[in-house]
Length: 300
Image (cartoon, rainbow, N blue to C red; front, side, top):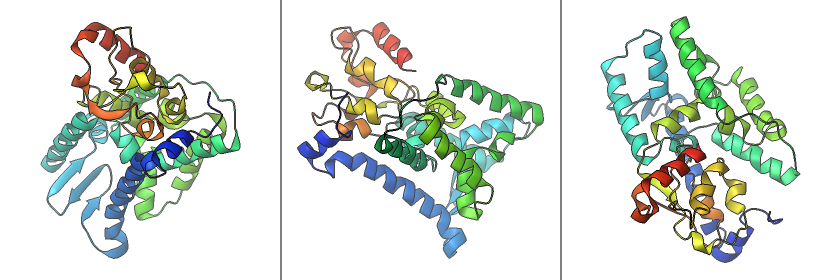
């Protein structure tokens, strides 16, 4: 493992801006989305009305969270026509760009968990509780079952993502407790614990975008110098190895795992420019479809 801070070689080779370009783009995107929601309540400029569960932009464009809508359907509540139109738009978008783009580019919890991970590295906190990454899928199933049994979208009352976003718009109140608990859990108990192992929202969007065409590809993997910086900063490091280390094993360089968040941090921190955004079709035909699918499965 490289003893230097992750990305130090990239900063030296490319400059600070180039070594943080996708991180800066994500923060700008997250801030812009939040600002659009806050303009109404704070400045009476209603460009966007609503919240992440359902919003209406310029009184014309509806956007509906498909995870919330699915819970509502299971609870026995049929949505209005605008909500159905909104969910079609959102599903189509996240299918194209990758479902967990939501986690890296939209979710308001992401900056807090990223901060916890950064502090954890800076403070040298070692050790971590072990919870299987598959746990988030079990939790996802439980939230859907809860909706069916209770006839309500009960999970959204305690969902940290929903609570934080509603709280920032309407006043945090008790949401502070839940959000602080997530932050402290990631900082002291388990590295990348919430987003990487427990969050059912991320689990849902990983399934939604599993077949998306936009992917990160280790197109120049032969240049890898094994600095391990990409593994250090990736919120889902298990998705990298099949694409990066699959040379000679019939596995293509494209990261096909649905849990990749398309955050671009591996692109930022690589001094050798191994990674880039590309398409799932960038896998060379000679790599073989079966082995590529096996690699994708091992990443999930």
